[in-house]
Amino acid sequence: MPETLFISDLHLDPQRPEVIDLLVRFLDGRAAAADALYILGDLFEYWVGDDDVRADLLPAVEALRRLSDAGVPVWFMAGNRDFLVGEGFAARTGCRLLEDPTRTELYGVPTLLMHGDSLCIDDIEYQALRKQLRDPAWQTGFLSLPVEQRRAQAETLRRQSREATRDKAAEIMDVNAAEVDAVFREYGVRRIIHGHTHRPAVHALSVDGEPAERIVLGDWYTQGSVLSVTPAGYGLEELRTD
Ligand code: MN
Image (cartoon, rainbow, N blue to C red):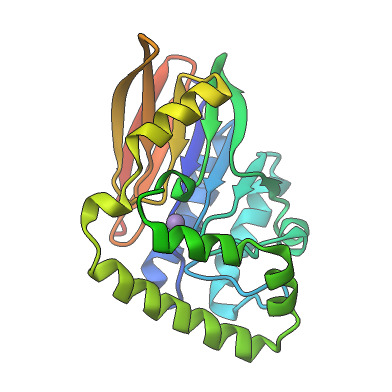
């Protein structure tokens, strides 16, 4: 049966080599037989520019290249950690870059693909930071810094994010229900697929009296998480690291 695969929030980090191995096995195995692979953000724990491909991450980058060379379209949408992935990365891996959000048809079902952070509007502090980091002028300035300095800033941001998250109520960091409704209506879809919250689930909803569903991908901290969509349906699956 044809299938399209979705992953997000791998947060690839040289400190978790077993997750890099798991991804490489997934890309060389299951994904090689798929119609397409979509990466919906936060593939990397952080990314300070396409001129800084850390050696420990090369196996993942090369496996993406093998997959696209094998003829499987690989779509990449940036998350809030790897928003500086750009054309250099696309050229190197063969991935095609996707805007957030992107509306597409999956085996006839109109579907909206997102990273998911834009739905978390109750976290006002985070949304302000997001606006700054996505500002083209800020990005140009940042990319003009030496790589070492960019890495140091990314580490600082990562630490601050960890501290900020610890003190925030869980519901503040989840999606806002009214925003989800508004996005369903704005894009005229009945299915949204996103990551970011690390709360894998299928939420059955009703939008204007019609059934709708929001599918949330899981993270890859201690296992892998994959969504498989086929013409017959879909399933959220876990991949084990051993
Ligand atoms: Mn994220």
